[in-house]
Image (cartoon, rainbow, N blue to C red):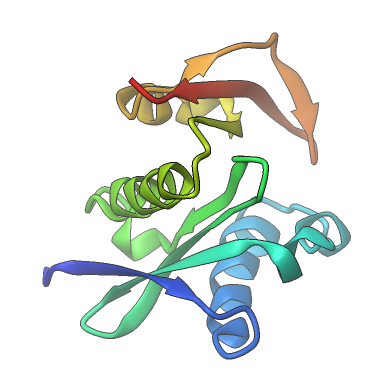
Length: 141
């Protein structure tokens, strides 16, 4: 595997790649209804695109309040630290913007991944888009 590059994406210019990845992961694989996947936050969010040898394989977004979400990696690239690279880029950008706390809503099965990155569970389990989730928080150390 080549090195993974993560860059800030342009919602307009990179829209096809961002949509392809999120639709594959969330809508097709996890059966999230499309109307729940796409929201008004997308136009104002900072989007991140992970690329392997120039090919887009993952995405995430950062909202102005420090909420990180829509973290998605195509199946063939999972377990290759693409998610780590996306999250580190989002955390660095949040901190660069003075957001000393980052929040996210995690699928329960993914909580160990986020805990490795310094997030802590701060809620009871709940359903979102039919999948069990928890709220998580990370504070700059």
